[in-house]
Length: 430
Image (tube, rainbow, N blue to C red):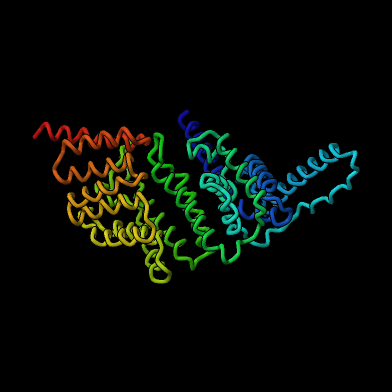
């Protein structure tokens, strides 16, 4: 009986592994298939819908023994047939509506055998991050068109209703169509700005996966891994771009800590308390190599500086060995180059680690004038940390309690409540 159960379990595991492998393959092929259709037929919106239907068909029909010899060609053929079917239905509808005008039918689209001669991944990145779109729409469309994720998968990743994601994607495609955007790389004059938008979208996807803004999970591995895969794709196409290389390094060095960020019960473990032996040594080595190369070969940018900071943390074998002076210098450069509320908070922490908690608290009081920071739970958490460093446990405890009430992340709230309780216990015992 146990042998039968073991065999059934093994078959189930093998089936899951096969499904995962096919899912990975489909995500990898999505840009090639979509690019081939858009180049052949035009109309990003209808082609993207056709590709999604082809992907769903493949997910249902393919298995370990039945993946076509030419999977790209198979997907292009199926998607093309769907695209032609849609065209025929639209033509028939127009004929019915305009019979009185006796319009001459439009010529049919080409046969469904376009060849994927070029890789359109970079073009798709730029199109999905078109300046006419909101950040939320750029993220959703990039994950769908370049990442190959379904609407349901994107909705689950961001903990929003599927209908919301579907609406974002639909509106994004309508905006792209209305803008008159063509399926081509942007002119040289616009390319740098558009690349910055692409990198920002990938950064947003990774950050939401690394520390979820709300919900019961601290992180969403599917998002972090997808962001890393996409930025690696971008790096392969733009190997000389320093910021793309810097962003990949930053993601690798940050995600390297993931195994040590939570305990078995899901409790958050702060950086200073993490077991560094559990960090991903392979990711750290690759990330350090990438950022070293980027800083030596390309103009310095914000992602490179953030990666350099992450590298300094990664190189310290113990928390007390961290070179905070070097980190403070890097944050000062980053603040001048790309100021932002979270950069300011991190810079304040580095300043306190170098010059003492009083200096950090003074700077924090001034920083709260920024509306983006006023009332933010991380401001209260940083103040609590600095007050604890200064020995004021009662005030630190109160700030941890406020921070816990303000955050929407369940793991963060539990950690902050735990810190407040620990400080309360310490105060009573003393």
